Every structure is written in structure tokens, then in C-alpha cells.
Image (cartoon, rainbow, N blue to C red):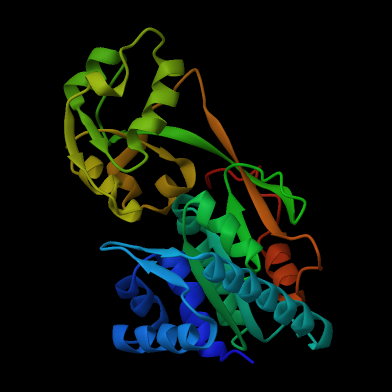
Length: 295
């Protein structure tokens, strides 16, 4: 029988690509991870090709990874079949993109305070990582912006989230030249979001590449900070804008055209949601598609 800790270290290394990152994820030393891989290779033969910046799995390594995934699925299914699945205790796991996460996480903490026997495990991640985490049974629930076509995943509409053009409070902008004079605050998805929204709101405009960039920030909770200080405008999903604490310093520019994204709630299709998950979703008052700003 293969040592479960060694197998977990191997699967993490396969996912992360480096010993350094794997040790951080596992909260182990690099030496410990290396030792686990050495034990496995002594037992099973070469599993990795070690490149300077990454590792590559050998055919034996790919077979071992398939074995690990099968074991994870078997363990999760057994837990579902044998557990009492109490609604008021245990861990709820949810993974989502950052914007909706800024909105949901405080609400989930409110729910946890009412149910102290439950623990919230939340991770912010892009769509590809969300889908992989749900398929690998590392998270029970996920939210994605593109509906998966995998038969292993059940998906339902969770929310609709418009993109918003956010200005400093008190600034008046009526045309493209006004935006150009104000300047753009960029972020990792900034140009892509701005391209989609500005193309509809300002037909014929040259797009965000023609705007002066007055700053860049990769932390979603801080993107609106330079906007609030009057340094420029940006384009963000509504939930990210609503989570910004200093609403009195920003404003949403009214636009005649909108771009709205759908958010899909996903989970494994092979078994039902836990009672905890069902209770949380009920408490959130689904669907969120009708969510609007409070008056």
C-alpha cells in the first residue's frame, strides 16, 4: 500500500510544478517533499523528469496521478455514504473568482457565526482552477463564469453580474475624451473588461489601449482605491465594486449599453450536496441574479 502522505506530496507537486511551491501548499519543508518523492520512486521507479523550473511526469508518474485521483474520489464518495452529514457542523468548502468572493465571503462568515460548529474554507481562483478543484473533490462548491460542459459537473445559474465603469465621486464624464482626460486604472482583467464594456458604451472608440494608464494593481480589493483618490477610472464587476468600503468616494457612470456576465454554481454531479451546503445556499437566498444595490 502506498503511504497516503507521500501520495499527497506527489499529487501536489504534479499540480504546482515545483518543490518550492508544493512545500508552501503542504506546509512542509522542501526536504520533506523531496524525501516523500524519493520514497515513492524507490518503490515505483522514476516518476519525474526534473527541469530547472518545473517537473514533468513520466508515464509511471501519470499512472500514479490517475491512481491518486481515483483514491480521492473513492474516499469522498465513501465519506458521503457513511457520514451522518450534519448541517450544523463540519467544513463547507467553496472556491470562486475574486469579485463574487468579495461579496460572498463576509456573508458566509455571518452564517458561520450563527453555526459555530461549521467551518468555512474559501479560496479565490480563476475558472480553470475552480473547475479542477471541484472535479478533484478538493472543494464541494465552485463558482465559474463559463458553464462547464463536463457530465461530471452539475451547474446552475447562480448570479448575473454586470460590468461597471467606476469614476471618482463628483467627476463628470460624458464622452470618450472625458475618459481619456481622467485616465485608466488597470488590473489583471482590466483591459479585457474595459474592451468589452467600452466597445458597447462608446461605439467607434479606439479602446482601452488608447487611454493613458494612471496605475495598475493586482489585488482586487484595492483596485478602487486609486479611483476613490481621483487618480482615474476603471471597469470592474458589480460585486467587486459593491465590496469596496468607501462607496462615498466613488460612483458608477450610467451607460446606455451593458455587458453582463453569468456566474454558475457547480458541484460534482455524482452525489448530492451536503446538508451544510444546502443550508448555506438557502441562507444566501438564491438566486442572486436579482440582487441589486440597497436603496
